Each structure stands twice: as C-alpha cells, then as structure tokens.
Length: 82
Image 1: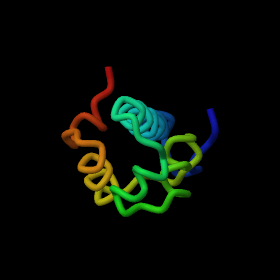
Image 2: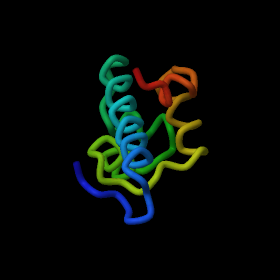
Image 3: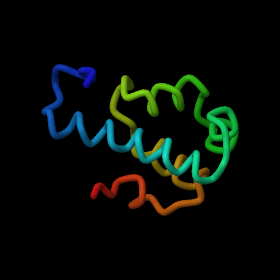
C-alpha cells in the first residue's frame, strides 16, 4: 500500500484509499469513464485518476460532495466501508 503522507495514521490512510476504491466502483457501475466523471464533477481528470489510484493527497469535503453528485450517490455511500 503506497504511503500517502507521513502525517496520516494507517487507519486514516486506509480510509482515503477506500474512498478512492468506492469512487472507482460507483464510476464503473454508472458506466462512465474517468473523463466523464471529471466533466460531471468539475474535478480535473488528473485528480480523478489519482483518487482512484490510491496515491493522492487526502480528498477534501467539497471534492467528496462533487463526486457523490456526479456519481448519483449519497455522500455517505463514498464514506461507507464494510
């Protein structure tokens, strides 16, 4: 698992990675590309790619809100971990 930041605990790092996994899951479920998600969310394609690849700085709340709207899911669905 790649290290995101020296300031994050392993649990915090895993939460960020899980958000990226959830974004990728819902994007594929919706049948859209990363570019389409970028267009829908207003986030840069590079940002989407980094979030999904697990090597991104912590995702901000505004980005999570935009991603949830673009993915047509509730915010909690990006933050729910089984």
